[in-house]
Each structure stands twice: as C-alpha cells, then as structure tokens.
Image (cartoon, rainbow, N blue to C red; front, top):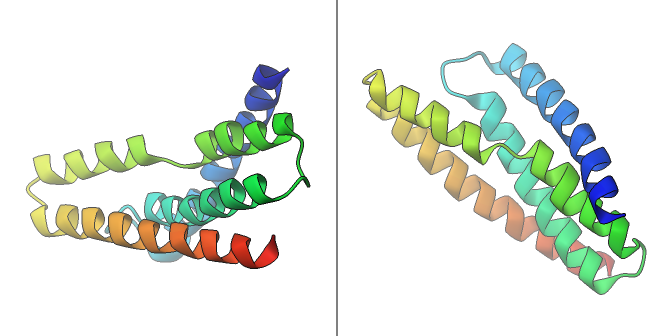
Length: 124
C-alpha cells in the first residue's frame, strides 16, 4: 500500500514542480535557475514542516505521511536538477552565476527547512 501512496503522491509532486518552476521562470527570467531555486526553497520548508509535524501528530496515517514525504516531496524537490544546472553554468564559464546558485540553494533551503521545523513545532 505504501508504494501506491508514494506513486500517486509522487505524480502530483512532479506536476506541482513543473507548474511552480515554470511560473517562477516566467516571473524572474532564466538568468539564474530561479525556478529550481524556488522549488528547492519551498520543498525544504514543506519537508521540514511535514517531517516534524508528522512525527508529532496523528493527523496523517503512516501511508499518507510516506506518500507526502517520499512521494510528493520526492517528486517536487529538484536537487538533481540543481546539480545539473549548476554543472552547466560551470561548463559555460558562468562561474559567478554557478556560485550564486550554489550559495542561494544551500543557505536559503537550510533556512526554510528550519522555518518549516519551527512552524511545525508551533502547530503540534
């Protein structure tokens, strides 16, 4: 049953990532991989929130919790895309953009994961 939840939620996460990153690229342009950055920030917040709240609450069944965390968040977050896009920037000689992409993804995602944990602690 867990695999079914992971598969279904993962599909929704993939669609959500596609729509969210596309929307961000329309707003911010493609000078940096802003769509991937935004999805990683939101995904870090949501995963921190879901993992912490899921452990402290009985709101979600274990199947739904694994569907949300492994499935949806696994489909939604894009660290592999971040890695590839950063490599492409380095290969293109865009060292400043690659460095900024690395710095922004790591620092902002860590901060938003912490924010998610703090919000979940207040809710549970």
